[in-house]
Every structure is written in C-alpha cells, then in structure tokens.
Image (cartoon, rainbow, N blue to C red; front, side, top):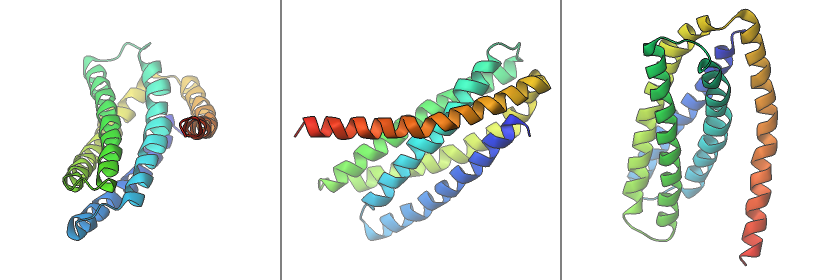
Length: 182
C-alpha cells in the first residue's frame, strides 16, 4: 500500500463530516438556532481527526520528508498552498467554536457567523482534498523509493498510536485547569 492510500482513506471520512456540516448548516439556518452539540462535535472532529491526526501525518511526515527531496517548483508550490490551507482551516474551526459560544450566550449575530464559518469550511475542504488526491499525492510518491514509502507507512502507524494519548493528555490538562479556576 502506498502511504498516500492511508491519507486518501482519511479524506473519505472528512468528506462525510463535510456533508453532515452542510446538512446541519441548512437545518440551523431554517430553525434560526445554533445546534451547539453538533458544532462542538464537529469542532472536536476537525481539531482531533482532520487536523492533529490527518494534517499531522501530512505535515510532520510526508511534507517533512519532501523537504529533503528535490521537488519540482510546481509540487513545492502546491505543498506550500496546502500548508496555508491547513492553517486557514485551523483558524476557521477555532472561530467556529468561539461563534458557537457567543450564540450560547445569547448573541443574536452569532448564528450568522456560525453559518458563514461552516459555509467557508464546506467550500475549503472539498477543493483542498481534490488538490491533494489528484494533483499532489500521486506524483510526489515518485520522489520516494519503495523502502522510503514502507518506512513512511510505519511512521504513519506510529503517529496514529501516539495521537489518542496526546488527545487525552490535553483533555486531562484542560480539566485540571478548569478545576484550578473554580
């Protein structure tokens, strides 16, 4: 299996959440209410799975390995753009959580901001995924030997194993911080 196959499988799960976001955005627009529980779950998914796990493998393993290769200018430019989109997605997800919190506090303008943020996310992810799957992942595999690809898959596995521990380390630290602030 090529390392990119794992990343592309993860893309399919992200696409499913994007579809759910689109549906929930329409519901919230019709009801004129923010579904706080859904937004919190979506934010957790994007922060943990899409960003820490998926983008983490891309940036910390694949993109890092590519920095040691003599890439074409086209591939280098695409990779730079993908990293910028990861940064943009992180900001959008963070703002979505803030807007959800404003809605819970009764800010009447927050609903429109939540909907606008979701709209941007559901526009960003499909084009980002398409660019990775079609324009970047396949051609950059040619920069790696078969052994390097096998090693990358092993690095992906190790990275995934560490993520659950990192997530719940943060959960406990957040709970402890909340306790101190009481």
